[in-house]
Length: 116
Length: 114
Figure (cartoon, each protein chain N blue to C red):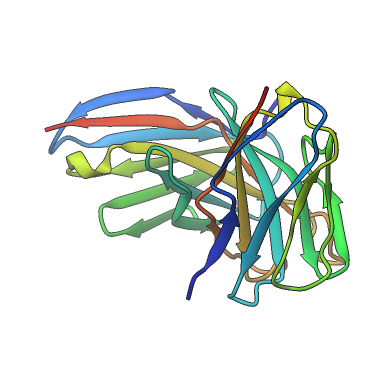
């Protein structure tokens, strides 16, 4: 099974509301990243939080990380119709020292629909 | 900067045919990787490379080969295509495997095997 699992699988909200997505993972990590994918397009990086950080902000995005629970959440405040997309968490796992084992492993994603 | 460029964007293959999906980046990134995306499965790592001449297997490597002869290019080869390889393939690069770095993705190759 995959390293990361997002919850919920799908989320529908009204414009102006906040959207919260959760990610759980299984092994220790170097960092956790969130990505966005518009339909049929490549993924775009949103935010990276290191394993020794607990919270990070970027514009309307707020990410938290709880390494004791192996979980993270992404909050999008004051959502807009343009935020409609799939959102993925990705965990950076493995050893940096000595090379070739560190990997970026993605979860299954949350499909967010923001209704105008 | 072009970033990460994948070709082709669409491809239809017959079972048993071979082909190479091309990926090139112009950012001098050490780390390159290939993912496949299937409905309900998210992205799964196929192969990755931490530098020219160094490759390793990801989560789902069977049926795929890779090589990294230059920093810029990381082609993915399907030696004998199977219908189970019908998917959208994404190439991604990162500045370094040894730092906390983000991945940059290409626009994807939609492959259908009939």
